[in-house]
Each structure stands twice: as C-alpha cells, then as structure tokens.
Image (cartoon, rainbow, N blue to C red; front, side, top):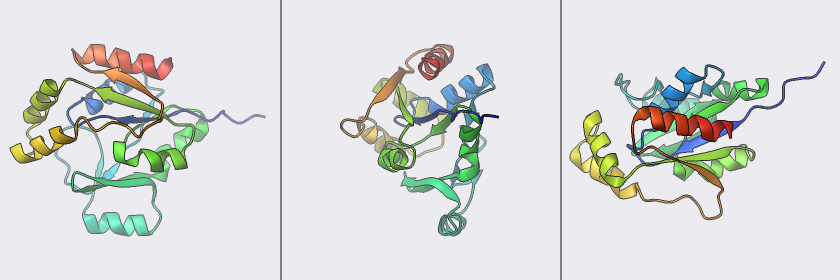
Length: 181
C-alpha cells in the first residue's frame, strides 16, 4: 500500500487590498479539493475578510511558546500564526493555500522548501479603493498599508504573479490557473 503523495503548498502574498481573501474564497468555492489554511490572528473577529481564529496577544504568545504554530509572524501591529493542523492536508496530497506575508517568506521557505509563492497584485488606485471600502482601518492605517504596497519579494525568490485588476471572477480564474498550471 502506498501513501498519498505530498500535496502542494501555495504561500499567497501581496499588498493589502489586492484581494487575496476574495480570490482564495472564490477558488475554494470553485474547487472543494483545495484547503485554505486558517490563521490565528491577534485581533477580534470582524465578520469581514478571511475566516480566522481570533485571539488576544497574550493568548497568541502562550500558544507560540507551546509550539502550536508551524509558521508565525508579525505585521501591521498584529501577530499571525498557522497551526500545524492547518497544514496537515498536505500529507494527504491536498493543495493548501496559505495567506501569508512577504515578510515571512524566508521563514516559510525554510520550513517548506517545496512551497510555491503566489503574488497577488493590483494597481495602487484600486488598492486604495478596496482598503477604504472595507472600513476596517483609519485613513492613517490605509496610507501606511499603501506605503508598503510596492515592497517587493526577496531577491531571487521565484513566484507566480496573479493580477487581480478586474472583476472577482477574472481574478479567481487566474488564481486557479496558476494553482493548476
């Protein structure tokens, strides 16, 4: 009896407002074999955006100290962690999509050398419009996120780019094509 071949891990990154959550949700709706690794985030649940497990900073730090996360990072004043169980579908041969952070790429590559990076992009004006529409951040927070939007990936890191500059259906189709390609 042979075991399932290892699945594929896609580390999805891009600037705030690029539409990562929208594309990931659409990809899952179109292909139920995909697994979206849910993160633990040190912020309250808002009902908008990605599904995640909310926690306090103290709860996050306790879980981190207990070794609960396969990956973890800090961005935008928040702590993000990916529980080991969220990556378990890889062992069963499934494709796992992980909404990551450009700042955590080196850590993720060290832990998962076979992962593929997917960079979701959108024009700056569209990023600003989307960030304002979600109503989650102050104007100053939006400006800070936009200032980081043009941060590139570490030099020499291979990635696939998915432009999300149109209707969600187009971006979702492009994402699925990148995953399947």
